[in-house]
Figure 1 (cartoon, rainbow, N blue to C red):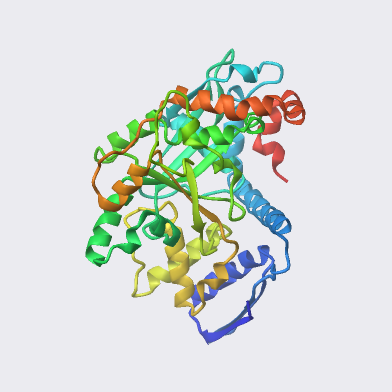
Figure 2: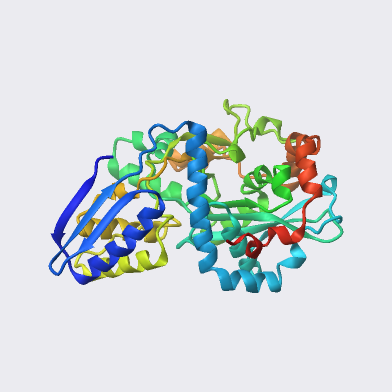
Length: 414
């Protein structure tokens, strides 16, 4: 990207926002210069050049950047982390010598109590790519291993309202092929009421070494989650889940979950692709994950001071408030949203049957499939993924060397 230069009159609130924004952008290795003068400001931005990076180097580069962001989040959550680790969390982590991976038996529990929500929050913070808590429609579930001598926490699943517009998702479903704009908007709105965004899918050690992330991705469609969704949202069925990869266009956690191989579960004779999650395209590459609380609050002050308020999407997207505020603030300051470009992420759409996709496009609930028993998902995962992990000496060595204290975020903080 060429250097962006901007000189313009600027009020106190805009200066404050641009000062914080410049600090955040430098963390991403961009070249940023910001100078404030009594009656104007000067902002220079040049994106870090990654054009010569190989795919492997690029992925590692993004991992390093997000590791920095993760450390920043941990520092902000320091008090909560320590309180959690000193109270309810320790007894939920697998202890050395007390774990038999061949006895894993998952159970999905919707987060309802304050403690369950706190456990989920801890898992969300632990997740390699941190996410906001979200606004609007959202709920979470914890997955416990009930096959051991006592229940152990395997990981967490977080679902939030899907964004109103996502080009590759909308093209895959067929919403952008509807000629009438009024009809397209009506069907999109109805479809989004039957769809969620998988914002958190995080297995904890040692389950992560056993490919439990794939089990969690399956369990996002499980009966307990489907039941809670129907009770919470106008008896609508959960027809599909959309999600994105973390560090690049692909995410191994969503690959090779083949619907045809689910045991005793005659699913999708007509569904030719047969993969639970389909990679349907990539995002445009914008991200606001690096923005600190100071930057977001400064942006909010800029927007609220303006006579033009941001349009809100009624909480349909987990990060809509955060993104719209930041995008609106830089627009008011005369900058392009391109300063928020980082890396394209893969977009995945998951559903149990081709009939679900058709229902999303037409609005008619015919020939849809919304049932996935936990035990069926578990049997499939055991046979397809856990068995391979158990045969992998390196993986099993890491599982056997696992210590509960090594999971604690306080031990991982720099």
